[in-house]
Image (tube, rainbow, N blue to C red; front, side, top):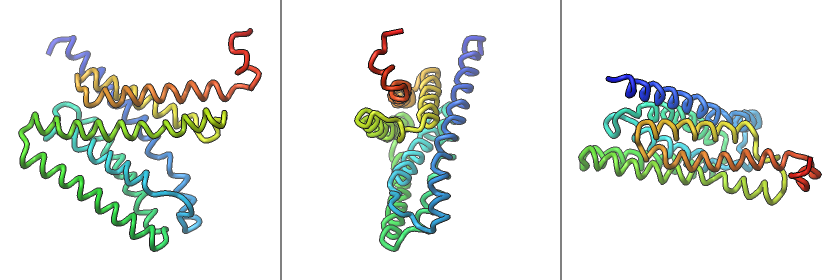
Length: 229
């Protein structure tokens, strides 16, 4: 291995580890919500659907990162394995404290997620050769990630409409941006467009959130005269 490829490998590992660390911040961010659920012994008006979808996303991306599907992107598998465990924990807590109707619905959706993941794993291993397997799971992971990264569009719209950053926590937006850019760099260094395309989109959306935060956290007078000293 020459020095150039060695440097690329070192940089890619550093980017992947950074992405794992920033993702961890996102994974622990719902903890206050679930503390409230446990304390009140009720899910109140909270929805469990975001955690169901996040679990499916983590499982698909975890599968993509495994050596049996893709080579050399194991840090994608590690981050999503941790993410899947967190989402599963949140879902179990939600089911325990939900009323009967929500309990049945969430349990059914959880079984459906595991069924979909099992079907993807079975079909990709049994019926597809390695290149086709990587392509299929890669496209599924891209679609899943882009959908996940599109969810901040609702927050962006809310911030612009209300002219307030009350419902867009700064550190959550910052972590999303840093995680996306870390995995964008990881994908670029690994020459894997299934990683860098969705994370590039996530990085752009994260940057928009940070720009909005900087703009709408200013006093109104500063917003009206942005070019005046």
